[in-house]
Image (cartoon, rainbow, N blue to C red; front, side):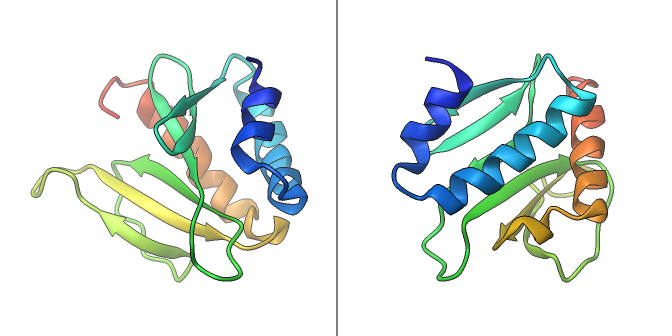
Amino acid sequence: MSGEDKALAFFGDSSVSLSVFETLKRYIGEFCPQARIMIQDSLLAFRTNAGFAYVSKTAEEGTLFDLALTSRKKINSDKISKTVQPIPGTPSYIYHIAIRDENDLDSEVRGWIRQSYEYSKLGLA
């Protein structure tokens, strides 16, 4: 199943979610054309050797999907809906960003996506 087929199956009849996902996919393809889309349980993962951007459906009204990114940097922003530190005391974080429309994929979020990709190359993500 191709990445496009996986996304179609994942989003079903939500053409708006699929359209915004396609914008995300095009952006990631600009700096990481080798990224693959994998289905992992209830999410789509962009990955090379390791995952770096994760898309999951959400029940939150008005939100198209949740975008999760990994980072070694502490990010303080109103755009972050949830922060998880998987191993307390380590410099590793998972950030969740509620994507409501294409404008949520602004330059700041795109920068975090690139950071997450760079972090994944360290083999620590």
